[in-house]
Image (cartoon, rainbow, N blue to C red; front, side, top):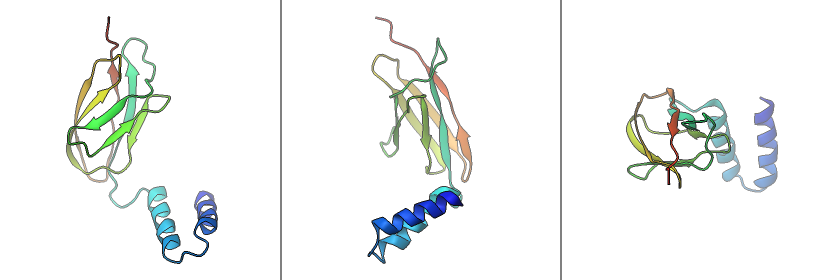
Length: 122
């Protein structure tokens, strides 16, 4: 609740004289904070196969190009709003072997999918 109030108060400063975009900003913020209606998510970690440490900067791109993310400093990724159904991705980073990923997502469910990557041996 405090986070929502904080965001709305600061949104007033940004949209001070904008009666159209301020309500949209508030609505979009509320939907993001509460998770939306039937929100489907895909999230997880990309880790190094030998060390089990997260790998930053891994690109995870759907085969159709619609969805793409890059892992954070801990190797975490999240597709916060993704369509339910089957998806195919490729995880890639220079110096590592690409990893194909196939997942079938259910409406309104958060799927946790972590996987490991191997370094390319020169």
